[in-house]
Length: 96
Image: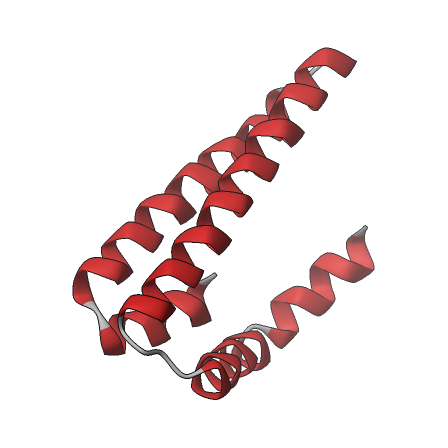
């Protein structure tokens, strides 16, 4: 999400604000996963995360279209963000 927000910020400040709010909603839902103690609680958390991710993607699509964003530049920003967090991602992968 960070790479997407960074790229969108380069073409639209208000778009970056929208996506930052979407990310906050997603992270808030994800934080709830740690405190979920029942199957229903886990399902509810998963549903909230799924909805937040769908909103993030839809908003990204709309902003890209409205501001003539470049899919290539967006991919490059996302890849750079993933590469920058590679060590953290590897640690999470190994701990899972």
